[in-house]
Amino acid sequence: MQLRGFSTSNRIFDFISLWILPVGYFLLLCALFFLPGRSLHHKLFYGLFSIPTLIAICLRPRDFKELLQEPLIIALLLFVTWALLSLCWGPGGEPIGGMFKPPLHTLLLFAGCYLLVRYRSDILQPLLFAAALVALIATTGFLLQFARTYEPGMRLIGGGAFDNPLLSSHLFGFFCAYWLSVSMTCKRRQLLWLSLPAMAIMFTAVIGTGSRTPLVALTAAALWLSFICWNRRSLLLLGTLAASGAAVISVFSQMIIERGDSYRFEIWLLALNKISDHPWIGHGYNANLAIDPGVGYNFQEPHSFVLGVLYYVGLLGLLPWLFFIAWGLLSSWRQRVQPLLIIASTWLVFGIGAGLTEGGGILSRPKEHWFLLWIPLALIAALSINQRARRLLDRPVEKRSTSDMQQLSRNAQVIEEDGLGPKVLRLEDGSFLKLFRRRRWYTSGSFNPYSERFAVNSEQLRMAGIPTPRTIGLYRLDDGSSAVHYAPLPGHTLRQVLQGITAPAVRQALVERFGKFMAQLHEQGVYFRSLHLGNVLVLEDGEFGLIDLADLRIYPSPLSLSLRQRNLRHMQRYTEDKRWLFEDHFDALLQGYSVTASRAAVDNLHRQVQQGGRPVRAH
Image (cartoon, rainbow, N blue to C red; front, side, top):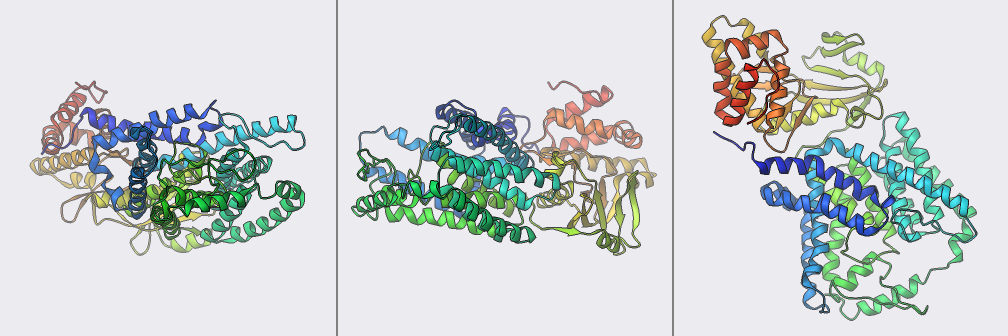
């Protein structure tokens, strides 16, 4: 059987999923801090996220069918469909194609985030952290410049593409909420000591803008965090929230009250009068809005997201809008074991608070308002879908003290150890405990501990039909290391089995079956860096299984020839493996590999072995 091979479409899809979308998402989050204007920000989003996502959908439409099983996405599609339908009774005169672009780019944001989480979940936390660092460094520069030029009554705007203090406060508050979330969820003390001053800097920037709504929004976000992460830090956060609220009121009370209500009540009343003309269906998604509360010029927005939805698409449009916001929060609460969902839901709560008195354009090109609604919702939807598909961690990580671990490992047999001590233990009940040493806080092993990678990889492989150990528990230890407790697969390593076989014909048949199994892994996109005969088990029913799964990655398409070469070179490092697979029974290995793999992959394997394991150029 020939599966998908090395077609150009596969390589394009992989390049988009693995490299283009992470870059596009990173720039979407932080590029406004250093770009000269919003138009360039739009172009970067279109070129590095929206259009690549559209190309990926065209290449593999079936890969996106999971989107249609998510209630949040269904509600979003209903909302967008109704908004586009409202063009029928909205004002004419504008190109219809231009009106379809903002909803399309919004939908592509959701599809792209789904693809990003599905295939690059390992990079997502470092990516958010890097974007927040860019925002932090830029904001520090904005504050220093603001302090040098400050005069009474000035409001911080910032540099880059920022041109309005209120809109600037949305991004400052967005990243303040991020650092607040990190301070509540991080496990490393170094990251905690970074997040606290970072949060203070971003909060100072919010204060500097003179905007009051973000303060309410950050209060709501802090309350949400306190309950979704309920622990000892929650009590500290609630106390700090009360103290900081009192300090802000006492120190900045003049700033808070001097501008009164900024005509909000007049604007809302006039907007409600206009809404009453068409309460059910609205004025149309493309309708214009001009409200003069008696100041001599018009406001183009009702300064409330809810009023904006009512004005443009009416009560019928408001229902799906309210549903996907409520469902986003509910999904985050149910799956709060996932730290990224805690961050995304905190962003959404911040956006809800900020949207009470700001905004109104329901569908727009990428701008500051996206940070209040669409960016958090897209991340929540992507995480929820992939969480249900078992591609993300779906179990809590338990904190275990030294005494707890000593009790658990009492009378255990050491299976593997290094200079720092045991690495793999066989416990009294026959289960295994694998320890992973502490990593530096800024490395990928800190953001995505190898114990958690082991559990997620094991679950994904089992869903793909490949036997793996069943995870019993995940532990975080006092010294910063982590551990995975798992039930072993019943069987022996392929290396042990081959050592015990004396008949060449039997060994040849087993090598042929292994070749087929290895091709199955490669064709399913499984790149197991540590693949060798000691990590492959022959089970009691004769099937193959995998162990030691932390160093494994699943690609969107069948592995490229270069990755297959790297897998083979790793196996050729072991003397016995090399002799059995690539010398004594190499023809049998090729025969088994050719059952599933493409002809190009088989020829490449043959050439590489003939050249002594050196990389060969694909033809």
